[in-house]
Length: 118
Image (tube, rainbow, N blue to C red; front, side, top):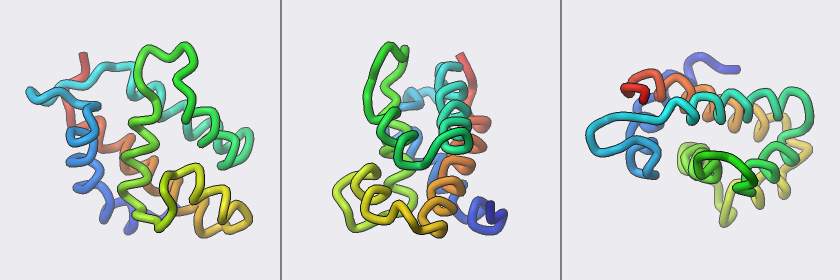
């Protein structure tokens, strides 16, 4: 975790949450989004980055579209690959990639605090 990097990403994360349809136009976010981003962090810690991204790429029985969180993280780190899964798969051995994704996920989690929860 790099605090300076998280601080740099935070304003962009705030904007991308709205741009990706997680926040409504009036600045409200469903509480379930906070649970989903926390679950993402736990999935990375307990398993692997690749498996966490693959799991969150599928809607499953989630009440929200989890892939929107992956889109925000992807937009924050701006890799060359077509989506976050492809980026992580191509660089799965890189600790730098894992740190980038974790920093972005933390920035998203913190940015969600700036919205009114429903």
